[in-house]
Length: 209
Image 1: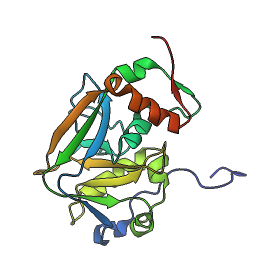
Image 2 (image 1 turned 135 degrees about the vertical axis):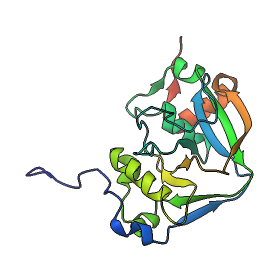
Image 3 (image 1 turned 45 degrees about the vertical axis):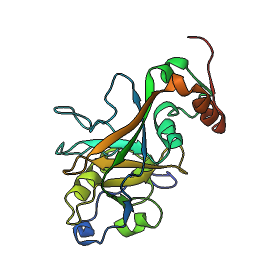
């Protein structure tokens, strides 16, 4: 830390050497539970990114590129916060940010076991909540370390950076885990619902094109 700096560095620590032998704090999501995803309408609703040959892009993308990751929220609120509310100082959300996206609900026909990377789970694992709010680099290392863990979890549960009351999931591209689309709705078709969620955050939709 630079001389005179106050507080932590802001970056989560890397996975500790003991992680491989640590009993993971696992949350089991029952089969059929709905996950929420907000995505560009031109993109597939089920996408394990970043894609072949593409370097790690988002928070828990594999640092080694050995597997893809699907990002979803436990609620539509969380999914919207993580996509169209990434600039907290902006009070208005431009209509193109909404009109180009869709909301999809997904489910899995089997239970999904995720590592609880929030609450008491942080101390069990040996990290802190910078895993949800800080730089991405150590997060990709954590994804790889948890992928390799003997308990073979299906993904990670973490808190939304933009609304820490909301739980989000980074789900690993493992077999035989597969996800089925329950429903896909263009956001303009549910504009009243979107506007109500934005209002909860003190935001509104900008008029005009």
